[in-house]
Length: 169
Image 1 (cartoon, rainbow, N blue to C red):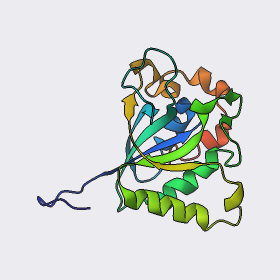
Image 2 (tube, rainbow, N blue to C red):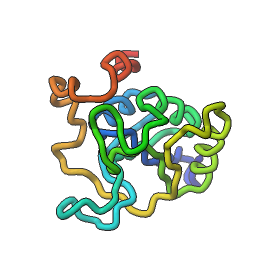
Image 3 (cartoon, one colour):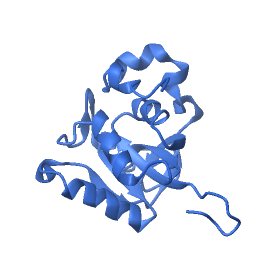
C-alpha cells in the first residue's frame, strides 16, 4: 500500500513456528521481509514476567507487499514447521510453541486461510490463523539470538540447510 504522502507502507504479521530463535533467523532473510522482532502473540498480559499467560512465541514480520505476500510468507513458514504437529516443533513442546499466523488486518487472515484451504492436506493442518489480540516484544537477549550466538543453531528444530536457505542470495 502507498500512503497519502506517496511512501510505501509496510505490512505486519506475527508468525509462530515453534522456538522463536530459529523462526526469526529464517525470516530475517526471506525475500520481501524488511524487519523482524521476536515476541509473544495473544497472551493475556503485557508482561514478560509471571506465569505463562497463553501466548505463542512469535516473530513480528514487517514486509513490503510489493515484494512478497501472505501466501508466500505462509509457504515459507511451511518450509520450517511440521504443520501437522499440535503445540510442538522439534524438541520444543507446549502451547507456547504452537504454530500460527496472527494479524490485525482481516485481509491477511483471509489470505492465510485461503492458502491453507487450497492445500490437499488442509484437514491435517494444526496452524492457527487468528486476529492478533496482544503482542509483547521479547527481551533483548532473544532478539536475533542465533545471529549473535550461531553455536545455538544446534538447538533449533529447523535443519541448518533450511534455516540458512536464503542467506547470501
